[in-house]
Amino acid sequence: MLLLALDTATPAVTVALHDGERVLAESRQVDARRHGELLLPAVDRVLAEAGVKLDAVTDLVVGVGPGPYTGLRVGLVTAASFGAALGIPVHGLCSLDGLAHAAALDTPFVVATDARRKEVYWARYDADGRRLTEPAVDRPADLAEQVAGVPAVGAGALLYDAVFTGVRRDGPEHQSGAALASAAVRALAAGEELLPPRPLYLRRPDAQVPANYKVVTPR
Image (cartoon, rainbow, N blue to C red; front, side, top):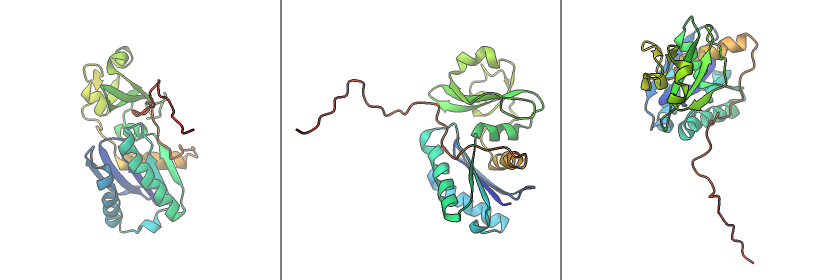
C-alpha cells in the first residue's frame, strides 16, 4: 500500500504519504487563503521526499470536513482528479477524526475547529480516539455546559478557551496529513468502511434565492 492523504478543510494545507506501516513524508503549511496555490506543490514535495512517483500511489484519502466551502473543495477535487487519472480508490475521512488521531489522548475528549462566524465545528471522542457523535456546528456559548472541563484540542478550542476550559494547549491545533493518513490506514486495516469523498457541509450556502424571488419568463 502507498496511501496519499490530502486535507484542506482547515487553514492547514497538508499532504502525507503512508506505506501501511509508517508515514514516509509529510508537508503542512498553514494559510487559509492559498489552498489552491499550495496543494499541488505540497504533493510534489511529499512524493519527491519519499522517492516515489504519483503513479505508484495505490490509495487516496481526503479530509471531507467539516470546513469552509472554498478550501474544502480544493482537496476534494484534487483527490477525485488523482483517483480518476490513476484508477485507484478515493476514501473520505472526517477531518475532525484526523485531529483526534493526532491528539493521542487516553481519556474522552472533544475536537473543535474554527468554523468562523463565531462558531465551531466539533465532535466528541472516546479514550481510543473514536468519534462518539456526529460532527456539528454551534456557537461556543451554547456548548458551555457540555464541554466545560472536558479535554479539548483544535483551533476552535484554543480560540474559545473561556468555554473549552479543558483545552490542551500542547495538542494539535490544525490538521496533520500524517495523522489523517495513519487514521485511514488503521481503519482500513480493521476492515472499516470509510466515508465517500464528498464534502461534509453543516451549513446552508451563503448564496440563496430570495424568498420573494419572482421568475420572469418570456411569453
